[in-house]
Structures are given as structure tokens and as C-alpha cells.
Amino acid sequence: MDETLFLKIPLFRHLPKLDLFQLINELPIENPKAGSFIFREGERGDSLFILMEGKLEIVLAPNTPDEMLLRTCSPGECVGEMSLIMPEGMRTASARMKEDSTVRVMTREKFSETLQRYPQIAYSMVEIMSERLDTSNESAFNDLVAKNHALQKAYDELKEAQAQIIEKERLERELQVAADIQLSILPDVLPETEEFTFGARILPARQVGGDFYDVFELKDNRIGVLIGDVADKGVPSALFMARAHALIMAEADIAITATEVMQLVNSHITRLQKSTQFVTVLYGILDLKTRLFSYARAGHEPPLLLHPDGSVERLPHSAGMAIGLWDPITVDEKEITLASGDSLILYTDGMTDCRSPEGEAFGLDRIKNLLSELTKLNAQQVSDKLLETLQGYQNGAKQDDDVTLVTIKAK
Image (cartoon, rainbow, N blue to C red; front, top):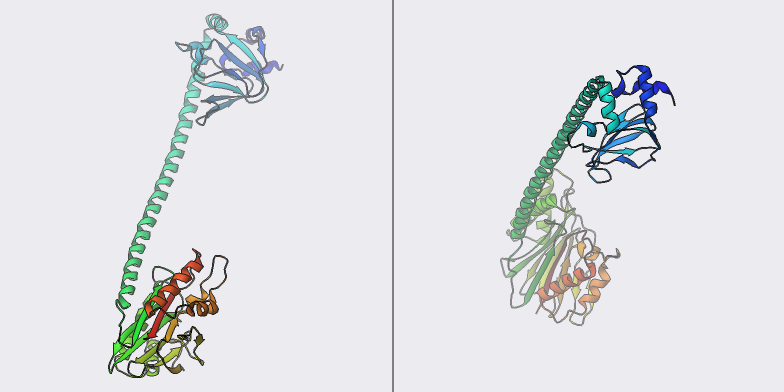
């Protein structure tokens, strides 16, 4: 044992060298193993320990979630002396060996005897307690500062989260208002005549969408039928949809042809439009006397015609340009006379592009096969059945695009 280590023991720093060596050598030796305790918090203490080799830890609430390390002791340090001077002699902390160690043990009786013989040990004890108090105060202060910083950080994060929640709720309210406004643009009730029934359904992919439709009365015993699909989704598309719908309705009231309506609306939009948005549209005029449906198709899906015998055909079509890209545009202008029992189905590409959970598109063939079974239904029932089947096929999968249907059926 390196006897110079004895001179480093703070408790005995004022003892004469020879007396110190004699005192230490009189103390019994113990060799506690790593992880063991030489005393525990709350026990009654009857000895102090001088660490000669190894390391130990002074801890509170050891082996619990609340464990706190107070300090780590090295050779030459004393531990447990506080219990020898406290009135009840209770241990205020636990001493756990950090590694295999060697300690000298001084009993309460030996300590009292030594204190009477060398009263200067009391001064050393006061100095040690003062140093530990300073260290404890500094540690407590640093711990308090760290906790204050952590608390401030948590408060700032909570405040930011609250602001985000408020902003999210505001946006949701505004989206709901936008959805209500968009729905108000669509017709509440579809016309029904002696010759025809009409049906329609719309299913936005988001709270607001870019699809729209309308069925409205015109002069001279005619009905206007409209369906449109703005590129993209969300609020920007909804705003563009509202503009396109309003312009089409305004031009349709002038009682001109469907093609002229498309060309005039395109001129308005390209003159006003400052972005790259565009809209595909099919607008037709149904003559209730002749059953002639004259329509102009601006880049939109061609209609499907369901005959009473269950056969379905996709109407002939040629190239047509979407509205809003350039001016002038070329539209696909066609007309068809609807025979008794015929159903004409107008739809947006969200119908064919809708996918199952496995990622397979619904497709045009499925629409045709389904329509062939719906010859006995009226126009609204056909639209309802199409959308119901589509949602069943989708089976909870993400909806990528708005879906809109308009059906015209000749009685």
C-alpha cells in the first residue's frame, strides 16, 4: 500500500504523520466487490470507510427510476462519517462499489476515541462538510438551471403546438366554408320532364374539389347539361371550378350553341387566367321536343350510351382541347338523338381511374358491364348504382381524383 495515500485523506490532514500512519494501520481492511453496498440510505451508521483502492459511488434511491448519483469517490476519500456525527446516526445516502475495492473501516467507538485524542479532526470535519455543501449547492443550482431550460423549451414547444392546432382548426373551418360554397354552386334539384329523367352524383377526393356539373332549363323547351373537371385538386381547383362554372352559365343564358359557349368561355378564361390551370368540359343542349342532344366536348371524356337491350357504346369522338390553355381552341362537336329507353352517361376520369386496394384501376370495361345491368333504372338510380359500385370496388383505398356522374334517360 502506498503510504503517501494516507496523507491525502482530508479527514486526517492535520494529524502528525507518524500518528496518522499508526491510526490507519490499526483499522481493519475489507474488500467489497463491484456492485455491492458498504452502507445503504436510511440505515443506522456505526462506521466510516476510507477508500484505499478502487472507486465507489454515493447515490440516492439506488436501483430505482429516481436514482441520483451525487458523486464518485477515489482512493484517499472518506465516506459515511456524517452518520457518526448526526444525532440519530442515520445514513443520508448509499455507498455502492463501482469496481472491486479495498477500504479501511473505522467504528464509531474508534472515531470517538480518535476525536478525543486529536480534536483538530473536528476542524477537518467542518471543512469537509463546507466543501461538500458548496459542491451540493453548485450542483443543485446547475440542475435547477438545466431544468428551467428544459421547462422553457417544453413550454415553447407546447405554445408552438397550440398555435399549430389553432391554425389547423382555422384552416379546417375555412375548408368547410369553401366546401359549403362549392356545394351551393351545384343544383339542389334536377329537372324532370315528361320525356326525360336526370341524375347526378359527385364525390370529391378532398374536402373541396375541381369537378362540377349542372342541369338547367333553357329557353325554347331545352335543357342544358354540363360536366367539368379542373386539373389538380384542392382549394385552387375549387376556385377555378367556380369561375369556369359561372362563365359557362352566363354564356349559356344567351341561347347560343354549345360550341360557341365553349369558345367564349375559353376566351374569357385565357384572358383572365394567370396560372397554368385548365378544365375539361362537356356541355350539351337537349331539345325536349326532338330528343336531340347537341354537345361540345373540350378535352373531356366521351359519353357512354346505354341502350334498352343492355348494349353500351362509347360515342364517336375526335380531338378536343381543354379550356384555359390557349385561344382559340378546337372542340369536338357532336349530336345524338336519344331513343326511348336510352341512357346517356357523362362522367369524369376519376371514375375510370379509381383504384382498388391492390392498385388496379376500375376502368371503362367495368363501367360498361355494370351499365348493361341497369336498363330498368331511372337516371338518378343509374348514377347512384355506379357510385355505390365504385366505392365498394375502392374498399377504403385512397381516392386520387374527384368522381362526378351525370345521367340522362329518355322515358
